[in-house]
Image (spheres, one colour):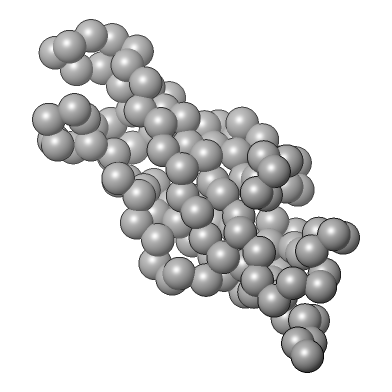
Length: 118
């Protein structure tokens, strides 16, 4: 399960995506490994944020995006908002097995501060 605190991020500001992991029965789970990728709607990684490993996996973690993570790309400058995605890939162990995948995608909108609508 992923919780998004605010529906929209602001360009070059700070934005937090909170994650709480649950197993197949809905119980809290502590993943054995977690990595995430920040990408645009075409799956292009942004600001080198590809396969970022969480060094200390826990039941609850925050992905903190800031500055260039929240940049408007060249082809997006004429849009008021753009979509961004954080792809989370984790593995966990349970009574069903070890190394089970736990994958999720968090989508959020990014507001372009320099956009001037008609």
